[in-house]
View: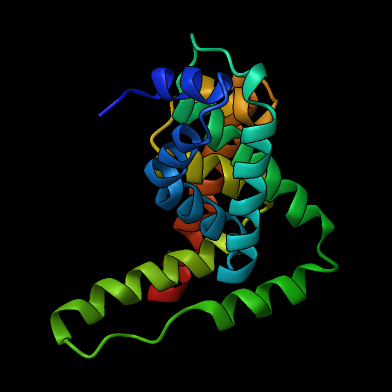
Length: 179
């Protein structure tokens, strides 16, 4: 299996199959991030396609000293944040996201776990976009604070504040729900 840098180099030399390999390698991570930010599968699919298109057209700007995964996830985050900004209202967004949550599975041992994930997803959607993006990149994608800051185009201190405030909101909302 070729590393990302070698695939990027092949792609820059005109080998489109190399970019296909990168898409295949990162498709699930990009979709997962987009879905968690946007909350709707069809919108996340569109954002994923846009992110890969931007990655392809901006590949000459990619710095091989950086992780390709981080670069791609940064592009994805920007696409999602732009998509999010373009949405008409927060209420419409929340209603659509609630409809996108799949029904609980029938096996009892997985029911509780799925309910927790659903509750967390719903609560994440209540957070301001900046806090939600910071939490998803830091906790779900496991990017360091410095890379989250670079992805969101803000200072590290701002990311730390967003992470703190987002965690506090989630903690308080969970306590309210569990009574």
